[in-house]
Image (cartoon, rainbow, N blue to C red; front, side, top):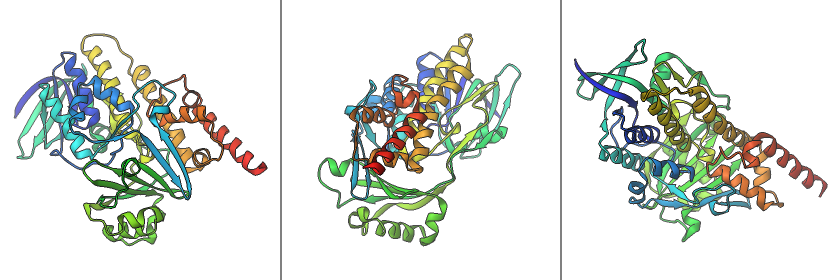
Length: 413
């Protein structure tokens, strides 16, 4: 069996893996990336947040993505019946990027991996990890198999697991943990959007409250295709047809906002369902490895936090691994796990508050405090580590107290 050596093996060529590999490569560390699938490949998570622009720039991948001319995203529109709440990233509280993109993820992820290869990083696609043996000195031997069945042993000083939903190391070590969030299901497709409204109204992402526990995303791409998805508790979908295409048609027909625009639209992505996607782990690093991206934790698609956390974790972990490779003492618990958890906890508050109705109360209230709206806007932009922002620093109390106050005002009005 062939044997290769590298300093760091990165498992997975998605956003987390590409950011991590690029940062390590820039530090002069030899990196090898293995990816199970052939790119481009479909994956959900198409609406980015401004925070990712910092990581694309840091990784040297920003100009590659700019060249693709994806649909720019300047904010988000939330709709509940006749009520509308607009967030514009220009008006956010935190210092940071004021825009980002809405992207077909297959194309976006391929651009990142090609940029990585252009930097001289070896990326092997259609290569599956079949076994990992960790040594006493934290080095490892990973056995991989390519599409032709050829096996190779990769000797590495450290592993960054960015395998996403494949969760290679969590599965191998049995460290998966059920998420604290309620189980939810999503049903989605990509439509040819021939009836897209003109101008900004047709280009911006829209989130629609369909029912108290059910919402819809509408994400237009620059290629004339729009991603549409319904998210809710699994029981909601039982009243709809089992056939995925028929189910999508029925869901669209039940939405006054979507019906006219998409009822006869062609589906260029077969309608599909994902269920039970929220997941976590009991540990995020160990002797010889660290997990990043969705291999660590995934919350919920409602505020598009997935790619943001993927890139943030890839960036933070890679810098610590680089220090470790150079013989410096690092603290993964404090500087990686605790840091990431603080941001994830902020978004967890907003996800829970979306489903319990607190954010509906805040977003669609007749009383809008513009300073508070700016602070919430920064959270929605992904700046969830800005402790100068009260809606980050005391996120749970700030959201629940504001929602309670607004409800009380309505009762007494």
